[in-house]
Image (cartoon, rainbow, N blue to C red; front, side, top):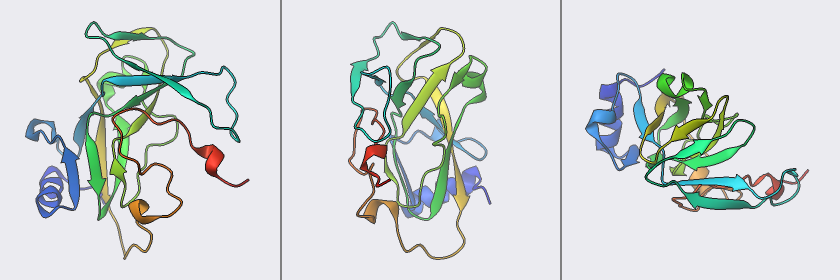
Length: 178
């Protein structure tokens, strides 16, 4: 079941959801709008290796914006730090972003109960498009869970994305054993 605006606000008031900064005007009917942070990143190497730590180059989006290019994978980050303790958050692109030909996530739209961080975005586009820090980029949708949680994400020993950051985080797939 998806939480409505009133249920999201109730969960925020109870401390079950944290959004920082929280802006009441960003609360929609059944979602919360999030914004593009000030940093983007691109991988150093043209060929990525799932078993290797692929490093990135971070850069700040200038006030004049930055033009995304098709065929390039950009890592972005939300301005908002979030915590979810009793719901499952899903991040989806805003329809206005989709209409500009921008995808904000390749496959990683679902968070976990206990996720506490900013959201790294896997950004790609179909045409060159200028983006700006602070622009609305996506929306968080919260789903109720059924049952108790044993392994909260922020308490898992092998959680790879717990370190709080304001910059996009590269893939940590290399930390998996395969």
